[in-house]
Image (cartoon, rainbow, N blue to C red):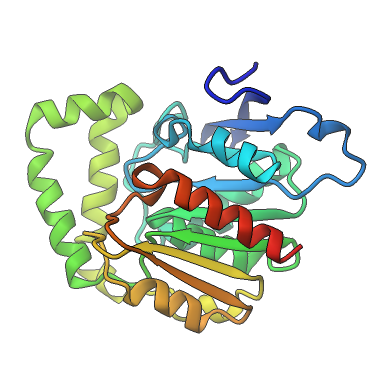
Length: 272
């Protein structure tokens, strides 16, 4: 169907069959892109800890329009419209997305070469996907990603955990995740605040990323200092660009959409 907020962009819903349940996805495609004899690689979006396809709001359609590329987003299993999960994720859940879930998403959606774009913990998942699929990942884009459990990260998550004891806060999340909302909160807070998760880091993964990297971060990000994008830029093996946005917090694509869209479009154009 045509996206009403972004003329010329067509959206389509998809269902992916996974051994653990069905995964919901949506794609946004510029008009005429299907007839291009040399189509550009699609951009795959990896959502944050409380996110889902719907919480990207109008950003995917705007990103498709700004770049002229197909954009795909999916609800991780347990989130949004995807099937629920019984147990909380294992503590290696960031790397496991690239090992157990994205390969099936990629296969069933017919994704060949791709651009990985991840927000927050989705940025860590995008890093792992870029490392695991280096031959076909053309570009890695991280936004507000974390490289390790920084004290600022953990204290903000602990504060959020307390806030979600309020039923009204949880009901807001239920609009997007239904009766999975409590699981979504627990999957975030109990994983990050688990004592054994303190050893988690992307330091060993980033050197295996050989594609060009754009790391975007807000200067006032309440879930991580600029140490994270700087490490992403310095430790990855490909050419990198780090953009620290002034007057910006944890969700740059919602707070400063025009800036983020321009940065992404220009970066993709610069690497051909």
